[in-house]
Image 1 (cartoon, rainbow, N blue to C red):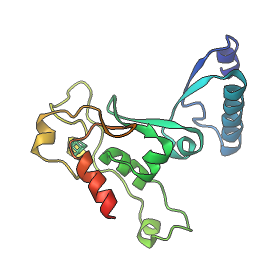
Image 2 (cartoon, rainbow, N blue to C red; image 1 turned 90 degrees about the vertical axis):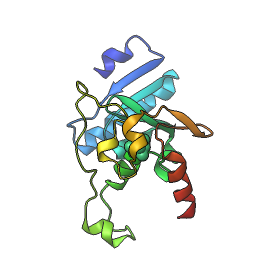
Image 3 (cartoon, protein in one colour; image 1 turned 45 degrees about the horizontal axis):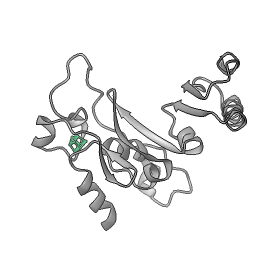
Length: 171
Ligand code: SF4
């Protein structure tokens, strides 16, 4: 599939879950190949994946999607260091802790995001993450937040992103 996609010398390659169901060795080979082709052909790659490990290794910019909408978008460094959307925070918190992690509680329990994704056929008004969000209030249930530039190059669709940003500065 990659050979077929590359045969037309594209400037943009959309790689949708290119390493799903592959073992880690083949996965690393595929990612190296895509990276090499990207440099050689001066091509942009849009990598679509659920694997945060791959994202942290490969991406320069990240757009996090929830229920069909982008909820946060910025550089890879910002997303992992300072996530401002509750869904992104939940995703990052759910990465299993390593033995080297200083937080012993994280080593004991795997963090999860409660609830499940809403049906796209029957969406309620307001924020799509409302039912699962620990920051939610009435405003969230009534009006859907739009993507807003909270800080330079950092876009977030959440009514509480400024509070979350302040909370991060206090910690
Ligand atoms: S808008 Fe409200 S419900 Fe939606 S993610 Fe932000 S705090 Fe949570």
